[in-house]
Length: 132
Image 1 (tube, rainbow, N blue to C red):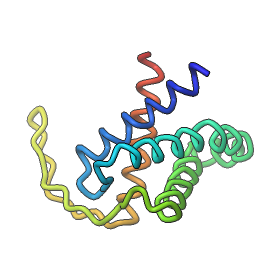
Image 2 (cartoon, one colour):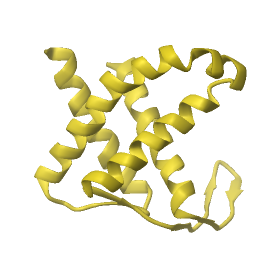
Image 3 (cartoon, one colour):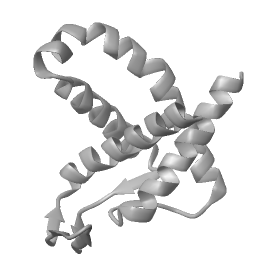
Image 4 (cartoon, rainbow, N blue to C red):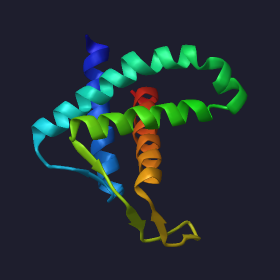
């Protein structure tokens, strides 16, 4: 029970942090929408992904995990379109300068933004699991 609650909280934090930095990842500021989206992402992360990792293991070994990223993005795309809780749209990254490295302005399409958003959510959840 504690692990499930922790995953729901981690999913909510990941959604919030992704919406903060990715302006194409749009979620309404209604607490019920955050809770529903966190529940859906937590369910996918605990039920669907372990099964898919087992089934897609040979392809993940061959592709060095690329199949897993594509599968997770496809599942999130289905959830975003089916339940209409989160909108993922085209986004223009304004550019940034980090530690002397300059990132230029980039236009990210809606499809590419789904991959960026799913990578962000997955990375944040995994980091939180490692830290806590």
